[in-house]
Image (cartoon, rainbow, N blue to C red; front, side, top):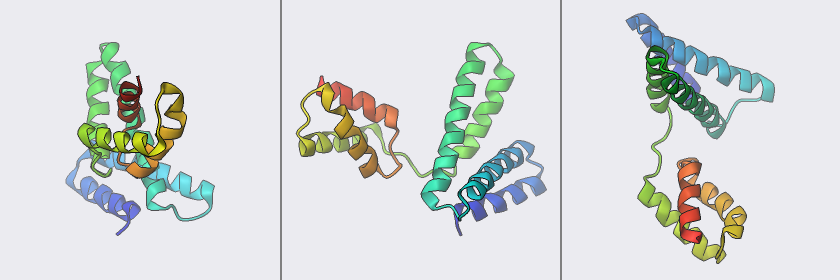
Length: 147
């Protein structure tokens, strides 16, 4: 069962259970996935589906921060709930320690020695991480190691 089918099934079960927040969140995900599918005029790969969900997660995180700073606890709580629902459909991300090991390996492979080498190291780190790496964390670790 692919991700689209899983999300559809989960949306139907949450609708039956009366969980409006989950149903609406999954309805949004399905709309985004179908939009992407229509625009690309082909079935989406699993990586493309995950990229759509990652984009939605990033949007929720940014909204949560904005609402928290503005003192809108009610809206921040809603964004946080949606964020938790969306995270269930993403693969487990690598831990910070594993990211550091991967970054160190890529640095030694590429013989990077200064901050000027970030451009050749980061793409390899992200490729080897296969979507399970938070790019911001990897970038911070890389900068610390190259300074």
